Image (cartoon, rainbow over all chains, first blue to last red; front, side, top):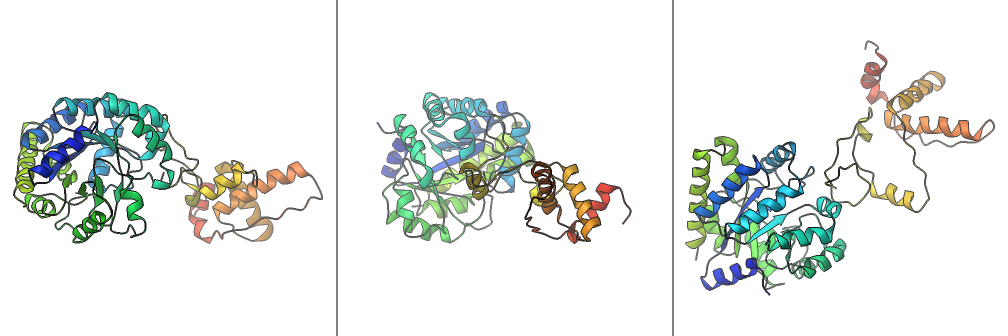
Amino acid sequence: MPTALEDLFTKTKAENRAVLIGFLPAGFPTQKESKAIIKAMIDGGVDAIEIGYPYSDPVMDGPVIQAASEQAIANGVGVDQVFDLLKTSVEYGVPSVVMSYWSPIEKYGAAKFAAAVSDAGGSGVVTPDLTIEESELWKSEASDKSINRIYVVAPSTSQERLPKVSSECSGFIYAASSMGVTGTRSRVSISAKSLVDRIRTTSKTPVAVGLGVSNKEQATEVASYADGVIVGSAFIKIIQEHGAGRSGLKKIKQLAAELSEGVRSAR
Amino acid sequence: MHGTRSYVLQDKDGQTIESHSISAGLDYPGVGPEHAYLNDIGRAEYRPITDDQAMYAFSLLCKSEGIIPAIETAHALAGALEIGNELGKGATLLINLSGRGDKDVQTAAEYFGLPL
């Protein structure tokens, strides 16, 4: 049976548009507020939610998400908050996934982790630092629970390696649009389009681009060639600057609405 | 952690725990995968050395040989002192003096409470 995430990509393909995915670390700035932020993202038009498991060594993330994750860890956020938020996000009515570095999954137990994601109604897990060569265990546990396995490919991923990774992905393939870490950039790297083109020669699985999109213009540009646009740092920055009170949430909803317009007007 | 699967300091959730060492080069919460492997196959033996043991060995080499070892290296010297005691008189020990300590005089002065 397809996951809710796979159904979403099928639906948006029929509508000839890209999916808008919003990212937020669990428990940022507090668990209660993170629920309100996700609600505001969805109310604004975000189609799917990616919940970050705040980790002490976030090697893929830039300063904005690092700071948010550190704050969440300092607040005592752990695995329970991650699954609680995942469940909430699913209850709000959108396909939801967890993004987690491998260490917390391994410590929790891969089988248990996959089961918890599935029990919460989650569609899958993004594993940025799990290499394909080390992924046998996760492959079997995730398949067992019928959840998607989402890996990250970058412009530096070689032509030889690309099909090995893309063929292991389900739900979507996470294309890191520029070398380096997450964070809002004034320009999304031009390498994003060529990376998406390269991925498409190896797989029919939808491709979502992350790392760099922060406004409507960029969302429109990326949505013209990708199946999904992932936005994280831009939302977090709003909370860092305006808090998660009424005005912050209003701005979150506004940005989500603008990005949503962007992905709908791209083609 | 950091793209490798090895021995790391971590809590019950798999979060990395902050490390401490007087030696900047050893102040890292993980063990290099090659060392972890050598340990697992029984090819090498690894021992913990405290800051105080390392700085005692540091001072001893400075005074007895006129050589300032790196503080990282001073840990190996401290290990050699332990092993020397275990083996007793007449044993032959080969120590790799892997780094020089002129970079560390500031840290050493602070540790020994000496003006610089």
